[in-house]
Length: 377
Image (cartoon, rainbow, N blue to C red; front, side):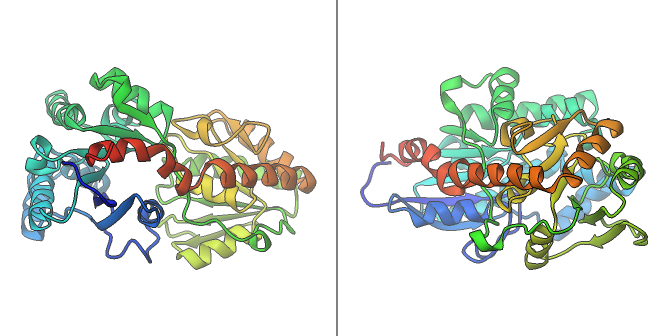
């Protein structure tokens, strides 16, 4: 389709979105950055939701021992994929004459009949095969189920006008595991929704390590807890703040469990902390790392997934091997005991975020391909 004026984009997102202009979901800032340009008009961003009765039937059909495994298998089943695809098709059909290109986040559904019609693009943090390979607990498909899902996933990738990835790590999987031509896959990186003004960055007045993550085990929480006593011996006044986990734990001594917090509370925690610690066992392109860097916090994190593309080891962060408690403790102790070094690394990280890791920079990298998909290029 060709035309004049801004290219009209409709977003299909993994997360529930009511108003991308005011919300703080992971990709809300991207939609705002697209909409702010003269070249694009984001007419809508929403999430294909499976009707509750159908969702319950799917969950019943895939019931497994253990709540987490049951929810994971039902959500990543081929039946759930098709149900979300029908929902996406209904959304697009209702808005048929209002958009030029579909912008789909993730690949847990297809864009309905638009898969064989109007152009669509995709934005990915990883592929299912990567999750199955590096963290099988989150993609515990049997051989037959995995083959079926990957077949559906591959078909969506193959038909997309262009695919954007948050990392070169994810880009390689799309090309090597799914056979998509390299010219149709671009690693754009990702931005952050929480970039403070210069006078709101971390003050780093106390040695506070901040952990942010909902999936405590996958994010390396057990490794952190095992490493902390060594940090406490090296830096007696150090504190560990843990945010996001739903585990019911009692705060004691140097460890404080904050549980889930809203965006305003998280901003304040970033301002008070001096180091972000994320010893994740498997990750794609964690937004929390970019957020922390934007607040002037150096990170002690692991060399997994797309993380080495976000941070610079020894410059703005320290990278350790996943599961290596001794290295994690050493890295935390080094930064918590040397506030000047931590501040210097934090300044380097913030400068890089402002220069390279904003949603505006991501939009610049996406623009020619989105215009082409919309018939403007």
